[in-house]
Image (cartoon, rainbow, N blue to C red; front, side, top):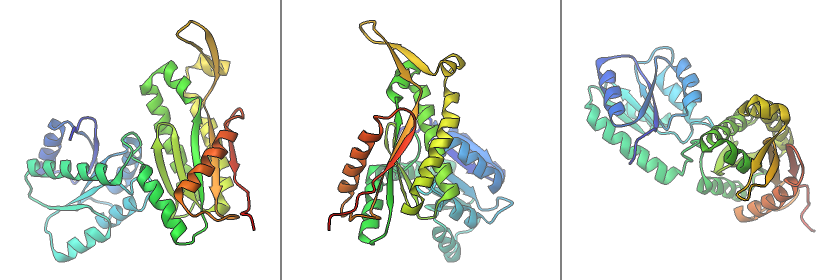
Length: 314
């Protein structure tokens, strides 16, 4: 696979072995970020959004399996593969590693070239089977459909929020795709931050692609979370504009014929479908209701949310 620009976080107790590993991975084209303990590693992970994490079993400040479990139980890093470097692989250490969610365990001393090959294979499998979005690291459409289908089969009450950035194309056309990628990543961080801080463990956030996100949350918290996402988005996103455009409150674009158009600054629309008052039997039905709600809410200016309050016919 093409390893260029794939970020890897190495949480290490510095040694000649990990130095050799960093050098090998860097030569292979990976972006290597390092941290010396679990507390700083979590901060680093939130900044760089690694596609793979390597944990040295001897890192200070935390029991490595607890930290592994913490990563795997988070919305941000639940699908990120984790490798644990250990001094000795025993039946108990294997049990502890896999119970914590580790995807592989490698005994020291190791051959950095062999580890690099195992990393490449693990990333390939992850991209193929987990369907993570390469820009945000969030699960994609197959996983979104699976989560909704599981909720339906388990007869759970749930809400699905379809989250869309308004006027993203005009922003992307005006400032370029690199600036657009920054908006996409920041939006994903806003959604994750709000839901992680205010929701239950069973919540889920996915990325359909482009500027479209999905959150599966408790129905009784849906409106509260939608408003919190809007508040945070409207506070942070104006920072992505040059001061002149931010002050003006809109951007000016010229089409291929030379005509000038004015577009509002970015806003966010959230359409919420829930089975609290109606029966939902298939992920496709949920998506269709979400699409119809989103088409309605996007006719309004500014950031807004709408929730489907329809009751199923008796």
